[in-house]
Image 1 (spheres, rainbow, N blue to C red):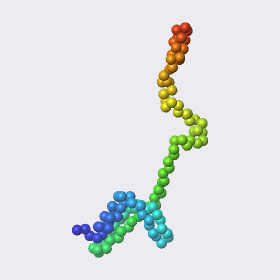
Image 2 (cartoon, one colour):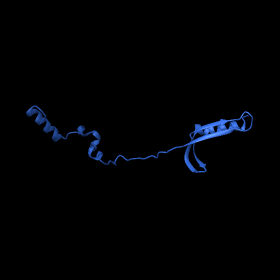
Image 3 (tube, one colour):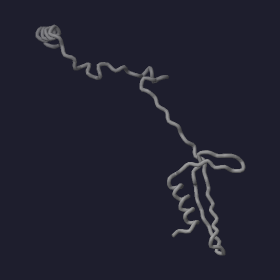
Image 4 (tube, one colour):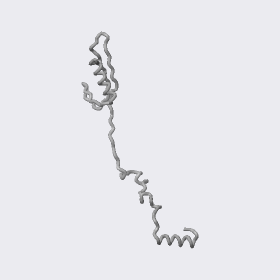
Length: 113
């Protein structure tokens, strides 16, 4: 099987691949949202059971999310906004019988609608 050193190195490698975030406690304070930047293992040629594991963490800034509803327009955009009318079907309205007669009357008497 694997040695304990290789199991520990494999564990930290899996955490690095998973991009896991940690809280790191140092003598100078506690840092949150840290990710593993690098992980280095070294072993002296004189010892078989001792390894040095050096892990470098990097602070990660986490962005939040924001949602905006379409009805909220501010600033100059509010003056440039066009209202929606009839869902884009304003030119497709059916004429009434009186409008049809008026159109036919104008067309037949003037030669144009």
